[in-house]
Amino acid sequence: MVTSLPRRAFLGRTAGGILGSMAFQWLQAQERGDLRVAHHPARAERVVVLFQNGGPSQMDLFDPKPELTKRSGQPYPGGVKVETLSPAGSGNLLGSPFEFRPAGQSGMLLSELIPHIASIADDITLVRSMTTESVCHETALRIAHSGHPLATDKPSFGAWLTYGLGSLNDNLPAFVVLPDPGGLPINGTLNWSAGWLPAQHQGTAFNAGDLTTAPVLNLRTPGRVPAPARRRQLDFLKQLNAEQQRRFPENTDLEARLYDFETAARMQMAVPTAVDLTAETEATRKLYGMDQPATAPYGTRCLLARRLLEQGVRFVGVYLKGQPWDTHSDNANATKGVAAQLDQPSAALVKDLKQRGLLDSTLVVWMGEFGRTPVSQGANGRDHSRRGFSLWLAGGGVKGGFAHGQTDEFGYESVEQVVSMHDMHATMLHCLGLDHRRLSFEHDGRKETLTDSDLTRATVVRELLA
View 1 (cartoon, rainbow, N blue to C red):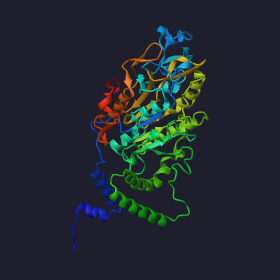
View 2: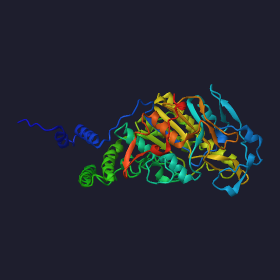
View 3: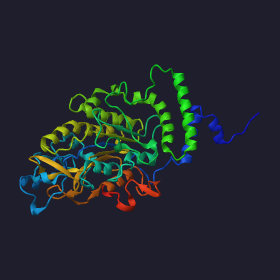
View 4: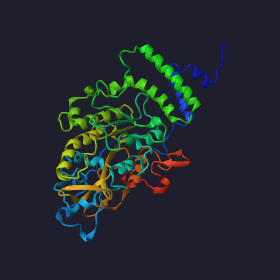
């Protein structure tokens, strides 16, 4: 006897099989509206953000200011009071002791502290006219990640991206974070939160300090639990969670739990291969500086980022411990020390993506939450500055060998082609095929967007686009 079943009923009854399970999940995703398409043709498919916690000093790295050096030690002219975090400690102009040299065919002027980034000058767009809304680390980090200075429940950029475009793979999380094994950055996990978006869009932290035994915490099944018993446990948990989800459909944590169990099961097979750096050639390891103690920790995370992008992870964030660029004292030596650790691995990631044919479809972003002041804090430090700072991008959708915008003669305030953090978010989304005004989520009766577009009037900086 042949029985005719509706498509969903058939797939539901056969969901234990691989094909049935995949198709059933696809149909469920369709009905939930999880499957989305880009708003316009995308230049990039994925993003890696090398986040520079603390605020790199633009006038010592990316933004040469000969007038600042010439007048070093003098009061800021015109009686201008430079906005700082600690006004009482603000001093006279503090010139940079570092030489700036033309780099690449473009002749982009870059500091002697970053020779490796200088070697990719023709691949990057350097934005010298960034601004943000706060000189406080915690607040500026919230703006850089979620677009909002105060609220701690806003989704991060990576969560918005995976919500908007979904995943490029079935076996790894769409949004992966690589923190420093030595500790989290300021604001901790809030930097990769899903906020009030469905919880499955939050970042999954990988443990770059233990790639052999525990690259992802709590992923492996304890050895004392037999595989059939574990399968029965997971099936039972899935049944309980599914029942709870039917009773409380508004609870996205339950949906995320179901999603995470399924992803975790596939990750147990995929993660060991994805993080196996022993498969890399010696030449590749040297490229990232993994043969040198100073560059090996960051080089490991940058190489791991490339492998994850290659495996189909949509968004990778690479973070530093604490705030190493926060050079309140001895700015010159502190900046030199941090640059020596991060310069080579940062450039290596761009070079490696390019030689593998992945750079054109990957947007690389090197950025901090703000910059530093042109006046001294104490004898030789630099305080926080929100009015003018630099970042750079490379890869999918942006120009190479291009410098955009300008600060004043001392590097204090952005004065030409000014770019806000909201503008930068809008531009990054544009490269990925998303309109920042249309990528929205209904929350508490309001259409929310990453750029808070109803209020900020964020714009795509088209001058940066290739």
